[in-house]
Length: 114
Length: 112
Image (cartoon, rainbow over all chains, first blue to last red; front, side, top):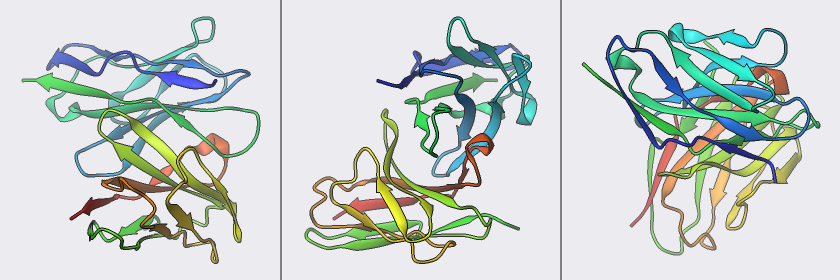
């Protein structure tokens, strides 16, 4: 079965430190990969995507993600965390087998301490 | 500005009632989706529609119904057959698989 795993329910970092939110997937072929962020009682906002090309993808608000095909991972990173980055982050994968369905991970809550 | 509008923001349902959640988009996107979000479970797909007058069941369609009479609108009805409807409901749209989703701000449904 196709799946997306975010192994950490919560990630805690100090402001100014680098952060990583992990994502691995089990999807055949060459899927499209996405990261979204959700603030309390709001919808999800698109952060970045990987379709093809450079393995390091840059997105909104200083976030970037590193694609590793051999490890089927797509980890979200930021060099210097801000308190305002505290939110719920979702990794998502859309198989390239046609159709419009996307599989979401369970989400990782990021808490940045001042 | 283009976007997706969900209404109402909060909705309370009595036992045995059907309720309808509205989702309207002005992005000219072909595909629209309904997701349910429960704490710790991420997003689960209820229904999706790729074109007008066509829609498909997602992973948890039981107890829900949808219609897609216009490109802009994709309302979701939570029927009395849905035994545990309390959740946060998210509507989304996309123009094609490579562009990702645009989400509405959600409707929080509570059974009273």
